[in-house]
Length: 257
Image: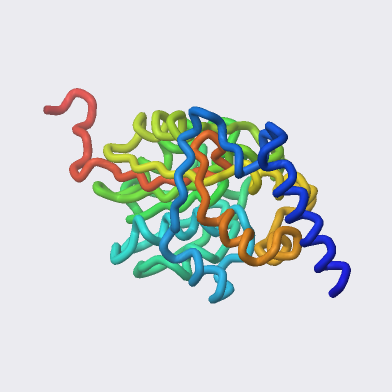
């Protein structure tokens, strides 16, 4: 206990000492002159942590954001490809939630076993970066969705390369929105990240060890761990998420009016 107190005291002194005499790129108290930093409080962050729905630090704001975007929405019949976390299924409303077998048994770039317009919602939770042809994968997801169906997708940006079995892509929020608009009628993209959360990611030894909320509390203290979840610096996105909707009526087949 004494050692933990001394470590926290040393970190506090170091932060105060460097607040005015350094230009440390990771020091939250010294954002860039033109920074678009915005402090936000994602609704649901506290509930997600306290209810034990999700303890992976970098995913907590993402799931809170998606829960806010989809609050009160009945997602109908959901298919999740490459399912990696049960958190969304505990936060959202739906009729059924089916998790497809993982790659290579099911490859989202080739969903031939799924018929056109066969589901209401598709979930890709940090999967697209592992797909060698993500544009084809998104086209396939759009194909299997009903008219007016939704794609719920999350992707990383400022995270280490992590093979599962491979890691191919990263998108900025603007880049991800552009890719999605090639296949979907309406796209809403959000992101979260900040420099100290990025430092926490590095210090945790990711990708061998991803930071948990408890790890953040141990390293930074309880108050600062919560602060990082609430702080969004737009130039430092760690995780990005989107809800994309197909057109309400299907496009006519080629050669037909």
